[in-house]
Length: 257
View (cartoon, rainbow, N blue to C red):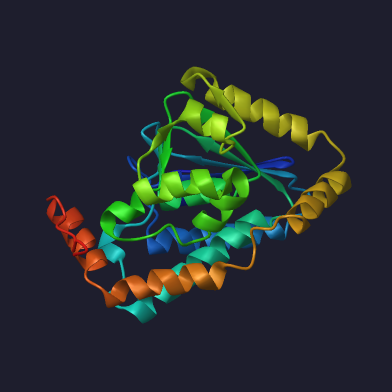
């Protein structure tokens, strides 16, 4: 499992998907397409009961999209988000139980990827956040709907509208991660959880996951998120935010009168 992309390793009932684009594990379009293909392979192997999603290195689980690949117009923006929504919905809908192993930064699309997993185990020095608004953008690949479902609208507003990352301990308090462990114990903790889950009755696990998902009220706003993201291209803030990011300068957003 080396190179740039998504590694896949299967050991009995446990599969490991590894984001391999260090040091920040940026989610390029090509990398997301590879993840889509890896999920299709896992779906075709019913013996896989648990999937661990991890990343190369300890600096970042993922900091999200490659800003240099952002589309230039509204049509492209909606297409980008629709594909990302479909990808994360496919991850969330895997029959296998999924575990996100979060080391370092989980920001933007990386945090959305984490939220699409059933279990989330974070190192104590991890940081999680949705900084998109500081670029004039939004976490629209299902991030807002999952946030509202997981932690409620009040706290979701704080994370999305301020765009400031939070420490792993605070993420656990809010209900964004299941457990926080010392960095040196992250691998062992995730492996133990994966083995515990894999030892349980497979049919019962699948049905439990499916039943909980059926009770999830977070569905139904994908179109709202996609349209909101597309609408950003009609103004100037998104273009300014992306330009400033790439030029490594502070953005100068339009301010209301």
